[in-house]
Amino acid sequence: MGIAIIGTGWGARVQVPAFRSAGLEVVALAGSDAAKTERIAGELGVASSTGEWRELLARPDADVVSIVTPPDLHHEITLAMLEAGKHVLCEKPTARDAAEAEEMLAAAQARPRQPALIHHELRFLPALIRPR
Image (cartoon, rainbow, N blue to C red):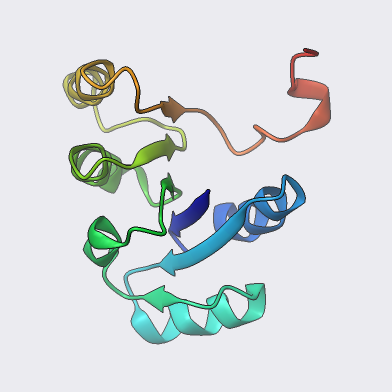
């Protein structure tokens, strides 16, 4: 599975190595500033970058999209990615308000074969992973 990450801050810097340690490929990094995103992608060893997250909608190699942007963008990005058939991981806080969060939940529930998780930055912390 290919992972695309939207956001260039701390979340991306933590998630890239975490996804790789799980055997997943990070195929793209998206941010609001193309030059900054390209620089950070280079630092993290991610081959592709873009300054426009919407470009990820059409990427067939981006099966999963991890949204680590400021919360005011979570709603729009989550709905667009779900509509495009992407699996979605969205960081906390979920949305700006309960109405946005409920709409995100409804969109995810309408696609039961398309996982969408809203979690937090520490999802890969061994102490928080429930034993199987």
